Image (cartoon, rainbow, N blue to C red; front, top):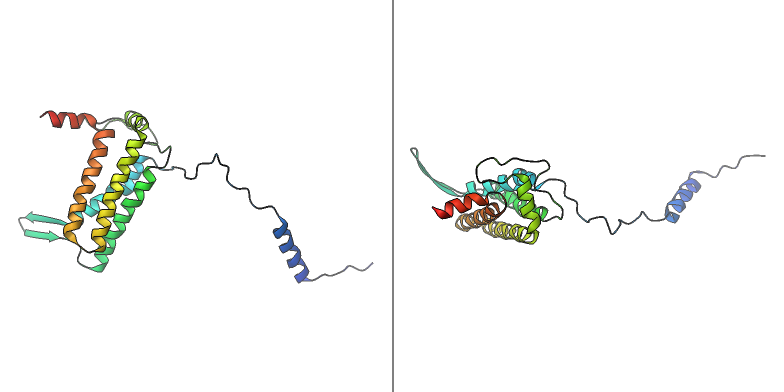
Amino acid sequence: MRPIFLGPSYAIGLSLATVACSPPPAAPSRRDPPLQATASIRELMEAEIDPSADFLWASVASVSSEAGFEDRQPRTDEQWSEVRRKALILIEATNLLVIPDRRVAANYVAARSAGELDSTESQKRVDASRDAFDAMAHVLRDAGLQALRAIDAKNPADLLEAGGVIDAACEACHVTYWYPDQAVRQASR
């Protein structure tokens, strides 16, 4: 008996028919969370939020030194683009903060100074008032959006004002979740 040679087009057709008849890949289980936190809140702060906020604050300033007065602000399109990039990082990081089950720290972090909470105590505060924590993240996002509007308008004065709103949003969260005892001491002076 002679073997039958069907040729490459038959093999390709057979392969396509096999793929077309295969069941679709399994859909994710409803029990799988749509988003999963990888970095801790502290890691997001150190990697994205703090550096971006610091960059925005430093981008517009009036600096007086022995050398004279410097009116710092973005002037070129490239400088405005870099400031805009940092604002976007800050804004998007606030979305990451509100992913359910994100931990304050990957591992235990001791308090660094008097009045600061360790990571376990901070986690207890976040867990006890998760809706308030998420609301504070949204306030920071809104402050970042205010900065983004100022950047898109290339308005240094509005960017400076937005920087103050970002600072207030950061401080409100910090005195609630990271160093509440320092806020009490400062208020009693």
